[in-house]
Amino acid sequence: MVVFCRELTGPSQQRSRQSSRQAKSVEDDVEGHLIYRSGDWLQERYEIVSTLGEGTFGRVVQCVDHRRGGIRVALKIIKNVEKYKEAARLEINVLEKINEKDPENKHLCVRMFDWFDYHGHMCISFELLGLSTFDFLKENNYLPYPIHQVRHMAYQVCHAVKFLHDNKLTHTDLKPENILFVNSDFELTYNMDKKRDERCVKSTDIRVVDFGSATFDHEHHSTIVSTRHYRAPEVILELGWSQPCDVWSIGCIIFEYYVGFTLFQTHDNREHLAMMERILGAIPSRMIRKTRKQKYFYHSHLDWDESTSAGRYVRDNCKPLRRYMLCDTEEHHQLFDLIEAMLEYEPSKRYTLSQALKHAFFSPLKSDHASKHWDLGRDISR
Image 1: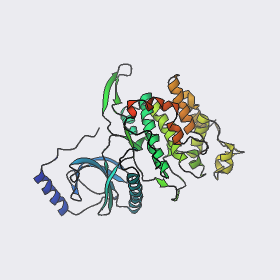
Image 2: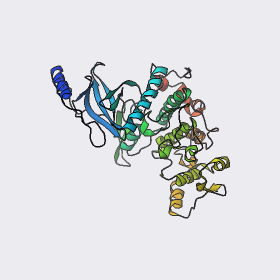
Image 3: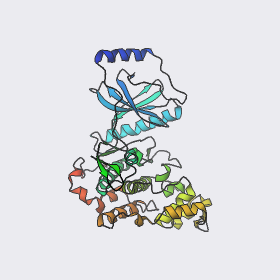
């Protein structure tokens, strides 16, 4: 939940703050971040309230947009560094395409309101959202989401990313940090056994965010994409990638919502591949034959020594996928059937999101009021 830094000032105070802000020179810190304070104005329009977050790209601040009736918005202020400015321009291009293709915001991608260049800082104004699904999990002691919430969140992510795929886009950086709750207000209960408070989010409505790495089919495809833990095998093996790499990421995300921890907890390619084999079985020989990364293999098998400390770590911390099931009921089996289909090694055999949305795990949503916010039958490829 966002805590606002201060109360809004009256109109006369706003004008004086505005004029005093404009009288000052615009300064950056050594890393290229814009130096600002609560109460500063940008473009005679955006009044900064508080800082929401920070990344390598810059900072996100909460603002009052005085030209949109005083609504609160999230303003992404990019560092005054050329590579981040160029990435922001590419993101703006993607966001403009999303706005054009989805004017009614039915497809659950974050809504861009406005963008501008402020003294060398690219700034993008978005709808104000709640915590990310990762931050909520972290603040809740990594307590997994209940399976009915996993179902609703997973369906929405598939729905949103299918819209991107239908429009010849691959997100390439899907992870729980880039899926935000519309509102992360929660109810609190006390767990007597664990002697702790536990949060349950009131609404699982989400938005997909961060299109800074999104890539159109016709654009150059970087060799390596995706944050490590959500990176598909074809990316690691440098076999080329397209939309199926997003599906792999979603499979990892759904697993994380369900158990509360990351499926592939590693920072090393060889170890990552060993974890995949431990959890999902042997890497297909075709992929091994075709990869340029032959250094990871020996006689067409992963070159991996289980007797090393890394080998023992993988053996002790990874197990076949179905053994992570928390319950032996039909809906849990359906969930793991879906995850398995998304974590298929071969991109050509991996589930598409059209197939995923028709999976039996999602059947309860088709007649459920939880789906009322979207037109499930609408053809979003047009």
